[in-house]
Length: 354
Image (cartoon, rainbow, N blue to C red):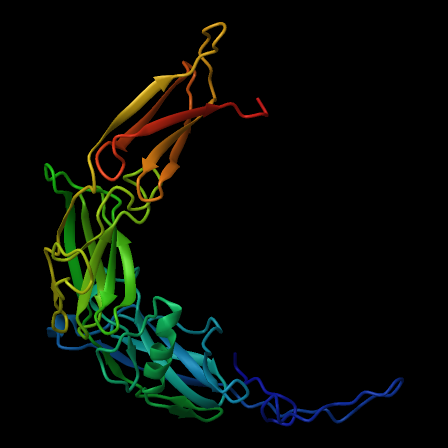
């Protein structure tokens, strides 16, 4: 940490002289003169807030160094010699080699819940840019935004100060998901947020026990669209979205018809709600499996629920379960209206290992 790492010849890896070692011969003169490492320090504040909240506490300075051999910005401050900003918003990153750097400031909500409302910021870059890629498709944009920041040239044995910046307020979306019939809350329901520019995926979350959801740290540009679907299959026993309509805000059946939502810096939109409806009507199927000769209840028999699909057409197994100690099984939320035409077939078979 106190000295800069270097390649022989005090140059880059690709330019470093190759050392040839002959058998039974000592190669001498492979010497190095070490430079002391450098540091970068500064102050981070929250943009456009009251003076009492101006110091950005618990913000990590992520330092990227230009790698000549890779031709890319690579994260450099993995030395363990950096800490998040203190109570005054000050930070220092030590143990850095000479070179060219960029800094990305990342609020840490584990230090301060208020940091939910602060967006990431690249030093010297325009605010409002999305800086946390949620999918591989967003990496080119993310790298372009990093490159838009100010390049810091750091010499050896230098303590560079005054690298100050402001983290913009991040926006938020919140809402609630309920059943269209009865209005009861829907827990563990999938909510995803999409960028209206090219309809690219931004991130997702799930509703809590009361059907509420929230999505924080959004940029104020561009607008967003919100989709609700049973992605996890929590309501249908493992078949994602099979019996529920996928819905876009506000009650739309497609992204093209969905209502866009947007907000200014440091604000957001609440009541982005959805009332989900099933694609059909359903009932329960229950029964008991016994030995045909003795009438004894059979435990551990696999039972399959097969539905007739008129589109295929054909029988398709949608669920399976096993009988309990009394030989009984139950399937819940079995559709009986279109497109299944009230047709259900049960198949029972014993595991050969039993």
